[in-house]
Length: 334
Image 1 (cartoon, rainbow, N blue to C red):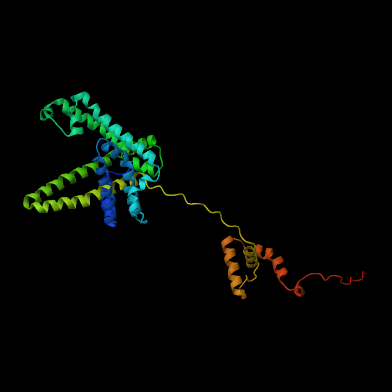
Image 2 (cartoon, rainbow, N blue to C red):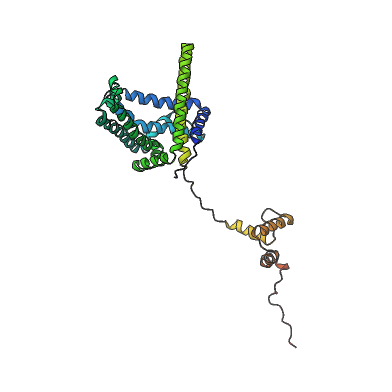
C-alpha cells in the first residue's frame, strides 16, 4: 500500500466520479446510504447509551456502504446483506476505532470548558445556548479551539474503515496512515470541502427561492437534494480512498507449469528430425512444423540435420538401414 499525492483538481473529480458511480446503480447505492443513516439515527434515539452506540458502530456500517460502492465499481454481485458486511471481518478492530473516536470527541468538547466555563459544552450536549454567551470572547475562543482539535481527529479517522477492513491494518497504524494521507493531500481535501460547502449554500439558496415562489415545490426540491446528494457524498468518500490508496486485490495463486509428457516430447523430437508427427501422414506438414521449430528456437539447419541423422536411421525399416550385416564372410587377405 502506498499513499499517493493527488493533484488539486481531484477534489472536484471525487464528487464527479461519486455521482457517476451513483448513476451506475442509483437504487442500490441509495439503499445502502439511507440504510446506514437510518440505522445510526435509530441507535442515536436510544436513551443514555444511544450516542455512544451510534459512534461505536459507525465504522462497521460505513464500511458496509463502501463495500457496496466497491461492488458496484467492480461490477460484482449486489446483495442487500452488503449493508452489514462490515461486521463480518475485523469487526472488533472497527469497534475499537469507533470507541476511540467517541472518546476523542468527548475529550475535545470537554477541553473547551476550560476556556468558556462550559457554555459550548452545554450547547453541544443539550442544544441549549445562552444568547449572552455569543458576545463573550471566551466563547469564540472555545469554538476556535474546538475546530483546531477536531480537524486532526477527523483526519486520523477519515480512512479508518477502509484501512482496517480492507488493508487489515491495526488501529494505531491505520490512524497514523489516515492522518498522513490527509496531510499529504491537504490542498485536495480543502478543495473538496470548499466545493461541498459552496454546494450546500447554493442548494439552500435555491430551496429558499422555490419556497418563496411555491412552498410545495421547495419541499420537493429538498427531497430531491437528499436523494441525490447523500449517496453521491458517500460514493465520493469511496472514490477518495480509491484515488489515494487504490484497492486491495487478492493475490493470484501461482500454478507451476506442468512437466512435459513423454508422448509430447517424443513427438517434438520427431518433428525436429523431419518425421511426421502422430496424425500427420504428409511430408508438408512435418516440414512446416520443422521450420517453425527451427525459427522459434533459433537453431541452424546444418547442426539440426546432423543431430537428426540417428533418429532418421532408427525410423527407417531394417532392410533400408545402413548397418553392417552380421556374420558376413570376411574378405581373404592378400
